[in-house]
Image (cartoon, rainbow over all chains, first blue to last red):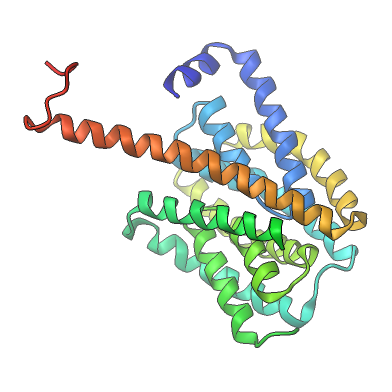
Length: 130
Length: 143
């Protein structure tokens, strides 16, 4: 991985083109699926742009904020916001988000990542076979 | 609404905690809502998109204060992505749900497999380093 990062660090034009390509895919994921753009933007920042993980996460959030705003408006106009449960879930997500950012440092992140990606894999398979 | 309110709140809390921890909450919130609570994919997507906005505004303010935010690099992704994001959002409103769901499932599987492999390699490497520190496990390349 270090060699890959070194390559992109010394080839600015290639890393720029690769980052813009990753950006186009980030937009597609955000628009089609309503999420998951960060899963592409963060590695684009760390691998292609050589940013450290914390900075990459912070910058990815800022990059995806306008995308989510665009998509949210289009989804609401498209009639896909269901207010009967939408308000409850949105409220809970915001409260959970605040809690999550506080407990971030207290749990072993390596184990957590394994669990998270394991669940993600299971969810993907479940959705594919449903 | 086909389930008790408490389940929607629990799903939201779980997704929010994951998101707040920087693990990509939406990638779990959407499957939780669709698989367990029978919410349609597009409705789950809308919820995820809307709830991301206030959370990320707060996060951006905090990150900017801590000087973790690189505005130039944020725009480098945000500007090209905005175009494909708007186009694919419009497309998603008309696309059949089944196609979108299958696409999302494949997206999740591919990313999860890549991430699991890269994390496994990293964990193996760090384990090797730790073991090399003990004389009981001499490594041929370690002097």
